[in-house]
Length: 429
Image 1 (spheres, rainbow, N blue to C red):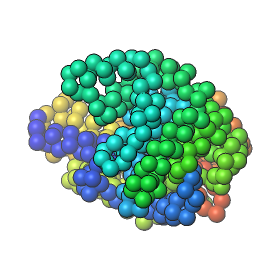
Image 2: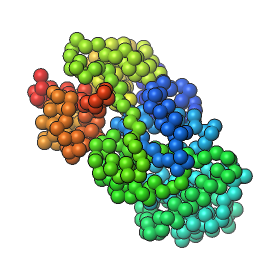
Image 3: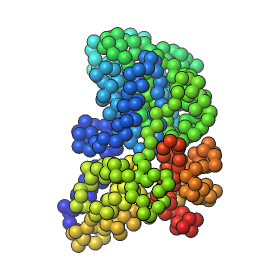
Image 4: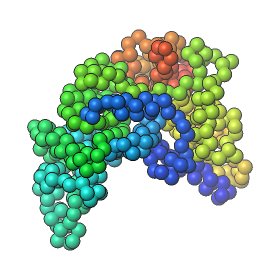
């Protein structure tokens, strides 16, 4: 087996996993300017807003929101005290509520403020946020006897419990659910202390709320929106694009002053009239942007140029889908090197891509109930949907089986890999 070739595919596989781009070195190596107009629009609206403005950023999962939000955080730092964090790093996704979102905001504000010695934080804030739970008190007292006591140690203990212990989150819920105004008050006092010292407004950016299951999204953004939007500083929230199809969710957001969410559109490779024409040529700018993303992670000599083009087109314009396809191809190459050790000139070709797409097609097939195939066929033929808020359509949108595109009007299309599934089932020609 060609060990050097295997290691190159392994490295490509690892590089493809570097989404979103958060670390400075990764940003320097892999960033491609993508979605810049969306970020600039959000940036300008934040700057022009009142100091307690709330913003919603939506898009398909994997479209590049996280990378864009990290870039936004970096660009806003000169004039703002920016706190950027992923809710998925703090709380198990199935356990997220409006209460622990607010608690996570407070914890992150406290953590970042504590790293600057000149920011004075009142003791009662620290006690209420870190010492409300007897288990935490016991554990941090034990640390004190070992000479490890300090605010940083307290924050680490509480953060670990928030991440790992359901019992801790349940107790947190009971403690603060009826004291939500107190929790918001602690957030506001922390922000005020930060702003007084730094002379910068606070901006909190919360990533990965768009990965929530739809029932949780409805509970958080519809039933508890007033509490969530109570802090008196700027906050950017993320939300799944499928939730934007829910009139009640949008009604709740509108009632709290969100004029409209900032949408990160899927890249369009084809115009709506040409979407299924075999003679149509893809949009050169969009195609080249995605090819650049791929080339920065997958060396050119490891993939046939025409196959790289097909990988991009099969992504439907969703960054995460390009990554899934490319990683599946790398995996298949690594398997082939093991099975056929003499394959010293192996690269990603049509045969490798065919196997990778078959595997991903099976993944989609497992998610699609038999009652949804007619809806998929309808979307494919018309680029419309009979009811954008129906449970079936929202499920397809949330699962990336249907993708939303923007022109003067919204239109929809079936994910290219799912189109292959419909053809295989002879539901379309």
